[in-house]
Length: 421
Ligand code: GDP
Ligand code: IMO
Ligand code: MG
Image (cartoon, helix red, strand yellow):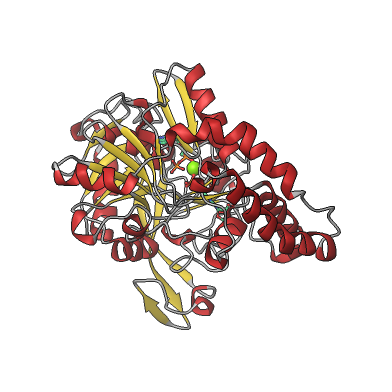
């Protein structure tokens, strides 16, 4: 399951629908830059690291090797869930996942400050610096928590270089490796250790036994480090292909890829946005759709559905179907626009132009469809939808070329309907 836009499509709530019939739910990339919201019986769960399947007792939640884990955030999340009566004992962490350290967060924040007008608008969670360390082979991994002396020496090595950067480039006092090691060894490691397991072995046994495994992408296709709107992207690969790398399974294991798309478009942070609205309709979408970041509280930018991006996302992820969310947010609109193509220097594009400088110049070509002016929040079947709503969803389906399996009409667990057979 993968976001087809710029994140916050409603992945968490769709995972919750599909996980009902799965035995394992795996996060394969990203970290606590994610915020996945589930609303169950009016209670709100905002998950950052723990897979959205956690609310079902029959699901084994797995954090794969491709994720970067801030262990403090993980433990807080476990405690918060426990306080709400959710048992996290089944949670399994890959020993190969990298840890987000306090100095990653400091560096993320300082680097953003230094970029001035060229800010990416990161979540300042340390995600970029943690993945950079992984690639530089100076990262600290989950399994290092099991070996205190090794952990201390890795931290000393990594911080010897980082502290020079912190002090000389940023004028920061630096981070004491031994104090950090003491805290990790005394307070963090004993609590994290019980969750560490052989995630690769576990997944292969599950697949061999014919059990259903759901891979929960965080972020989204156009925040992908390779395929997104670089440099306004995250530092991991949310696209479906990375589910394999980030969890340790082979390509043959995947037989279904569900792309999640909002019925309109949002983006939080900087970067190109061809269909962005700077008018009262944009404000309306923010207010009705409550488009404020799940964990940073930032106001999201809003715009019309972009079928060019959606088509590209279907290609990049090999989506077999789509789940469309937040259709109800469009309830009050008189007419609704959909960007069906881009025009760049007089040429028409049905897919994203292959060069970013062309993308930056793209002018949206819109189709305009009638609104339905009806409250959809109680719809539970396709025939509950007014004709105009069916036409809007069918139009998006034709634009993307794959069936729209689910349509969500409210944040609650039961507020969705099956659209395509
Ligand atoms: P994620 O990061 O993709 O999991 O999405 P977020 O949880 O960050 O943002 C989606 C927001 O929309 C959350 O507040 C959800 O409760 C809410 N939401 C999800 N689906 C729907 C829907 O169909 N209608 C409405 N009105 N809200 C929804
Ligand atoms: P979920 O999983 C929306 C955005 C940030 C910024 C860029 C880089 O909830 O959909 P980072 O902190 O990752 O280095 O920031 O990516 N971003 C998200 N936007 N939803 C997310 O996650 C995001 N995770 C990162 O706003 O533009
Ligand atoms: Mg989110």
